[in-house]
Length: 377
Image (cartoon, rainbow, N blue to C red; front, side):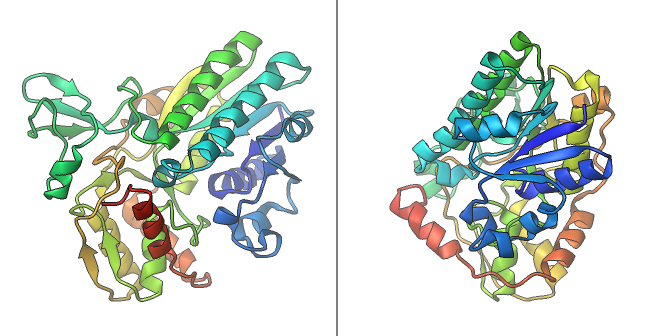
């Protein structure tokens, strides 16, 4: 099985995966619409990601919401890696039709074609997300493992940002495993849950092996530096390089699992190549929680640029407090262990950023938009 279609293959993860697969001898087709938000103005000439693959793949400029584009792309493919999606938790809460159309309907069209038309696809790898978990997993002193609901807006306005369960805040954060409760807190998370469930449900019934990867917060060289809606390392980097102060939401102690792009690519290739992955769902992260204040200070140090850090106490409705991955399943079944941890990854990322053109800081515009929609407090 040498022919692989990567939807969203000009994006951050997709382009890096394409280049690695080409090195391994695969023939890659990419279906991508070169979204303005990701690739910027004039992407054919200016997009770092698109230019990295354009002469190495069969490129189809199109959209996953078009049945004709899907049919053209699926032709003669052995494997589909489905990355194409609208991303960003905050933006998804008011661009609801767009997120559901691209993420859910786009996946539905793919599966409808696979279920009803002739093709040679044998495996589908779907990019799921840690966002489907919503808030992370905790240990309650009385009840054991618990999964807290959304935090209360009035308490966050008063400066209390930790999660509670049945009124108790004395909870111990633990890694989120694949059997954890699925309770997304954003439209984006809901659409990723839907994508994953459709692929894992339909594919086995039509003789196709499904694999789902729940990626944590992916970062590294090549990610968009101009998108103000997603990618905290990029957003902070753009602020720092413009000598603007960094605005940190809540109290800066909220944490995520930051996983380097090379590790994400390696994990995905194991899912493509190993039969043991068939029918399975895997977390992809590092198994380490890093708080936002640590991210900001690490970037400042790496760039050598002194800017003020403001812990604003502001917050976005729908944001979670903590989540990091339990990596035991993917280690046990696929033998995957992340190689690049946070400090090394930060150094690699910032070295790349320093060789890129400084982007306009558009964060304030995105914050105004979210505040207008009632999401930013």
